[in-house]
Amino acid sequence: MAGWLNVKKNFNRNKETGMPYFRQGEFACGCGCGLSAVDPYFVAGLKRARRLAKIPFTVLSGCRCAKHNAEVGGKPGSLHLPGVDGLCRAADIRAPDAAVKLTIVGALLGAGFQRVCVYKDKSIIHVDGGYPQHPAGLYVL
Image (cartoon, rainbow, N blue to C red; front, side):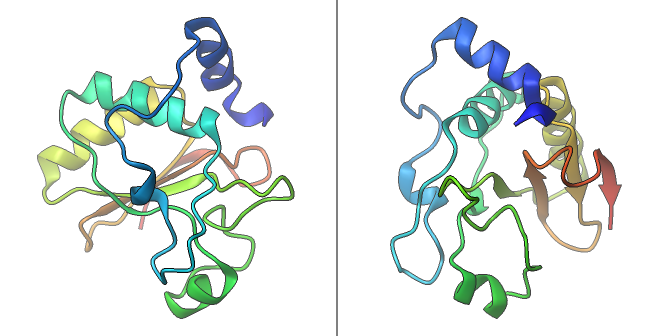
């Protein structure tokens, strides 16, 4: 995806493999259907952000099937859903307080992500690799 070119370029240069900091199950659909196909470039960006933040990231929601996405109030076309290539490109990360939110947001932006949503009344940060299909920016909702 062109929107996170920096993430792809760095992924290829660093030849990162595997998923240190994350378990595959963290990205699995919450309904138990088994969907967990997350884009490796997206995960590489999250790993880079995790290293920058120097704090753990807990993925609360990664991939979602269409049924589960509807159940949790997700939008049609959400990047939590598999794309045409079958891969998901979004994660909701646990952020229990303002200091953790600030640290995670800074690290995500530093890692090259161009679309981050902070929920001021919830303990989560949404990040995805959807730019340019979805507008880039730092959103506070």
